[in-house]
Image (cartoon, rainbow, N blue to C red; front, side, top):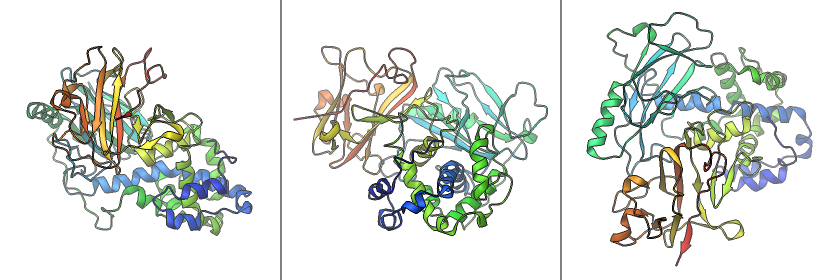
Length: 480
């Protein structure tokens, strides 16, 4: 991991403080002395915090999403499939940046003791993908239409060090960690008929321990822990941990979620501050000053990656996006940033998510506001090049859906978009209807600030493609 000391200075921290959710406290805590910046143990601890952020965040996410007795909503007990049955509406607040394109079929499970077997039914020609994330947020396998087709499939997800014999017809997927998060997505148009068709597919997706495969199996009720905070956002819970609690949790997780072989260089450094895989955290090796100061400073370093990304984040025509998701290697800062702002992100070959907060560009960029009108114009033959699907979703300033008379939260070809006389396609983004003849192309906006997010599932490769920059998303421009 390359943390730029030149970019990461006391002044950069102070400037970033005002933009973070913890700004009042952070502004007081974030000043860094030259003496601290000159200490090698400070930089090692900073690297350690960034390196550990995905694994600790995944654990807190797992706790919250599995702390129920039976599957309901966005949650399901460990080892059990959860199924979202319909798209959320504008009142939904469980997670930020929800989508209205795919229905989730999901599960957290532990393969440390024995493998789990995932069965996916025949889906005809329907687009779907079932990415599996390890404890470090890497997408280690992603069965689905792009990679394995849409026929019936059965996989055994095995843990680190497991060896054994699998039943005939079962393909092994080796998880690098004991913790696994299945985050399946099935495309659905949202009509009553298509809901019913997708529900049938969801009901046929099965997840069972290997010892129960081929047998009648009823999963036990989940254990609800009243000590788990179910109200505070996971990111806030993680960011609130003091350094000792954070690294103590991290070292405990390392025992069942081993680091990659390529992590050997950073692990050698981390041993000097009491972090050794397989062992408890030795807090005596970390200066007490860093116990108090590190979390706010390190989280600022993660968020600073937006500006000091070295090309990891693209910003074109007011749309910011990255094609470095899902697999991170030793790019630990990028991995931590995606954990903080987009946990569960797919590999870029499966999905890219350009996001836009402002119209225009440079010094003239202004926040989107529903008091004004905007258009996105796709020239003839230049609609988003995808093999799966594309959409543009409207969010309010908090990344939630916007109430509107059409109950339309995203715009895509399934709205039967009308082309202009010259073959181009215009998307109208405004609060009031643009008129009956243009409503098929209307993405309703709130009265005040809003954010746009495009989803490109299974983007095409070659020219043009967003993956190599040969296709560029047009700007959303303000009109009179």
